[in-house]
Image 1 (cartoon, one colour):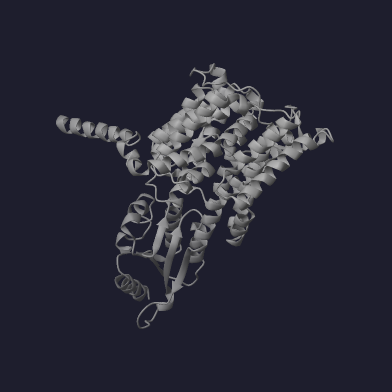
Image 2 (tube, rainbow, N blue to C red):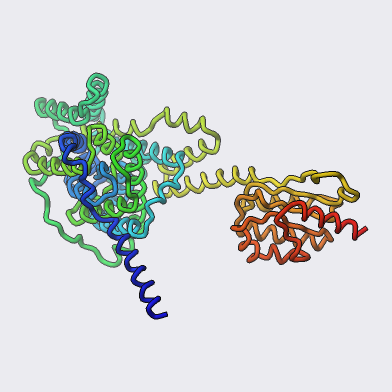
Length: 557
């Protein structure tokens, strides 16, 4: 017995170690590099150009500054590329994360973001270790589209201050309210200058995407508007001075009270990081055959990326759907492309920080407004609404709560709403039908009721099915055919036990036919079988059950 216990313990330890090894980098991560390095190099440089304005803009928009956005794109992008579970995922600051971080900065200050990044990163690492990677597959499509559209609306509204040249930071943490406050505070006609820069960025991006679709439109638009502003000697607010190197990693200052106050925000950030990263990896896998996605390793890598970003003074990171799509479409086949993207951004910091610091904030706002506008797809909304009332309601509720309350709350409520509609549909498919008795009619057959129970007997449908059976009058024997019952939960089994006991008290003999093997244990535990008048009233086939019922009627007569 002792040797058996030791062997079992060794197997358990071996299983744990094998699971941990599956979360770490392996040589196969770069299997296609020898033949595809040129594609990875081109893709990495392309994504770096696309990511530069977005990293700067997301850093500014979140309230922690352009420097933090760049640090996140470099450090988190590099760590996630090496340790993540997707061969082509590109990680860094994203619009969805900005939506969650902006209120944290308002309430706790910019210094809290690095602490939140560390806390959220640890949570996401643990989610990967505990194999929670498949959880994202339970988020319904209308919920994903609802919170994506909601994020787009919030990002757009968050850019209104920069677009109108308003620098007051005392606005509401709600994007809708803050945008309205900004409009009422704007100084006209002075606001026309930054608004013109935003419009110029939008026009340039639209023209380039129309006539040169492969060109990095956001980078070109910012370059053109920045040069024009510098030549005209405009007084538009700019990013300002940026460091010419990465800061040394350091543990941010915190205490127990701070950790307690940031626990909730960190959990929200962790949930968002996990959801968005796994969705992005799934999108990448659908675009091209670039190898399998290890969802648990992706969480592990994204968690490490946020931890590393926090140590360098950056923001929490997630997989970036748009940048990942650009990476794949530019020819990336291994994670070396994402590594090149991070190194290209590092090169920008080392050699071009003064140039980048001269970019007008209004130009970054224009890029983000265009990015946000693409996230609100009218065509997608039409598809959702055409798919049914329940999908439309789930989409609308998720969108409204995202904009008015909180992104993670919106996802939770959206999933709950979708689950309600799914359970209602499943419940409506659950029926108890009285069937005619097979074969030749016998005297007294009218006192035998044969019920076929189909579908699911669970908490959403149990009472209705029980009522349908118990409402029958003039019945002395009831045969319940359960062979077509697909799902039964504890509530359903308990309701069935109550039905059997109720019918038996009324003098109705209950026979049960066709209990499936995987349902038997639950029916035993909750007293369905023991509620029968006789344990022999449980049958595998219908003919013996029907013969027993007819014999019972003959004896009763």
